[in-house]
Length: 236
Ligand code: UDP
Image 1 (cartoon, rainbow, N blue to C red):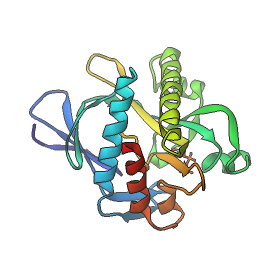
Image 2 (cartoon, helix red, strand yellow):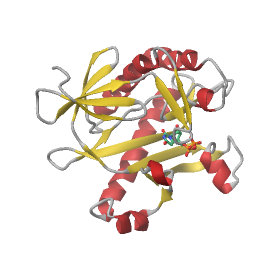
Image 3 (cartoon, rainbow, N blue to C red):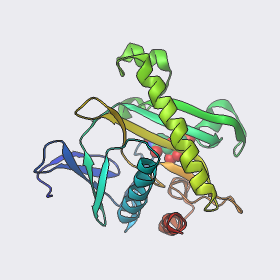
Image 4 (cartoon, protein in one colour):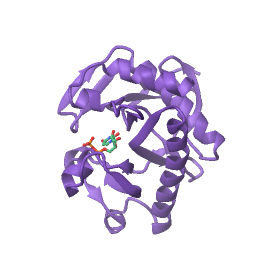
């Protein structure tokens, strides 16, 4: 399968059409962005790491009956995936309070939440991805019905259960993560985008060392080392 035409360039990936209808190639980039792309950087080899990590995690989820857009990894930074129409909601699941949640609600950073919190953010850079609820989704016409939102929520909770246990067994705390879903040609809602240290927060179970994009956001250094450590533990 070959890249025919670039259809879209996002912050972390480029999407290409292929000879086959409804099949795309996603290329993982080395670029890093934060704070709605106000902060920009690049880390040589980050694309390869995220490609490998995402591929592994999509396969893990597929084995656990979660439908995804993922078909296969084709080389170090490219995956083959089903074309989907992305639902413009960032589905964030949180096990521990940090980041924007602590700022918005004044919850202590690092507080373990009594249950996994699922939030919806409207995927719109110009608006700064605002937090929205089901009624906002309805008014904005983002989803066709309330059942679709319930489905996103239940998928996020299932995925959290699978990933939290997987990472816990590898000495990593899954703090929070962002998912994106899309509709395939048959109208099925499937998990899309990526699952990587760009979109998840991982803290070491013993030291709480941050092993994710917060190293870039907060200028903590050793960004690539942290992503390599996550991959090493995933493969262990
Ligand atoms: N996240 C993401 N893309 C975004 C916003 C958030 O991947 O545009 C992820 C982020 O890496 C974290 C989770 O979603 O794992 C929750 O992020 P939060 O709302 O705390 O935002 P931040 O602190 O990054 O502003």
